[in-house]
Length: 407
Image (cartoon, rainbow, N blue to C red; front, side):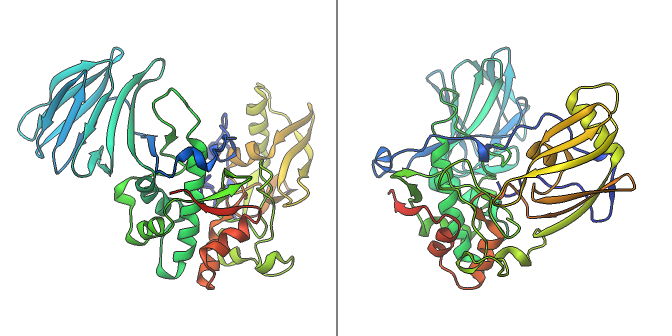
């Protein structure tokens, strides 16, 4: 969730229309509601998660230094440490081909059943290694899906460092806070996508960034282990603990009653220097040509003729002052664009910005990176450097939540 969108601009550079990322924006999964669960529902036991991997539907190569066991249709096949499996979509079935360094892969089976691939070691899928097991199956109207099934704590090993970035001993408490937030968020996602054979995607664009065992680091795993089973609770339910890169000094209100705006300062005091102020993500600038904005509006409205912008106004929320809507006055009437849609279309780091029009150029001055709701990762890292404990960090960003150990 941290890298909610990488802004494709440089300070002082004018962005042309061809540089814009324009299209239908799927609002980030971070904002989607997900029914929380009562802690008792977990029976004090760790759960398994199923993560859909971004590996395509043809020529998916699977291997392991410890060899593989492939099972489907009640039939089992051993694959040596020198061999490999290739998975393909083939007329509504999964085609399983097996080969080794000396032999071209040969068809073993075409199956409508789930393919289950396990190993006593890590499993390499398209050059990236994973814990747990790999599954492949066909979803009607979707095609072949490859899924990594593993336990929640091992999943977090591959999430935490991918989300919070480089981990150092002096930022360890922030990493522990990240682990608790990510564990909570994950558990609120498990009731979604029922019947699909997976609950999560491996991308921050839909859920959280998950990069498997190759992304693991010792301190990241230690942070997960030292907070094992700990989640954030609201009204005796696991809370959807959102997080983001940098709040720009004040977090935003979220869709849930416990996700309230707070100043990112000691004791949430207005006017003090924010914890996240030292980060390069705290403030940013860019310039976009008026022609590009007008072409964007034409695209969003589905028009064939470009409107001429004569003026604009920004509608912001009262708390964090983030842009909710942009209202353009044009020669074709008023055009209203959702703030988040506008941000993603232009590749802006956040909706926390001011916008001015001068000499047919829109000049942006903004703060923060991401949606701004919940834990500010840059702020948490600075809090850790200043000696705050991970529980204090969590209480700072989620004052309405409490920590509970589920298992």
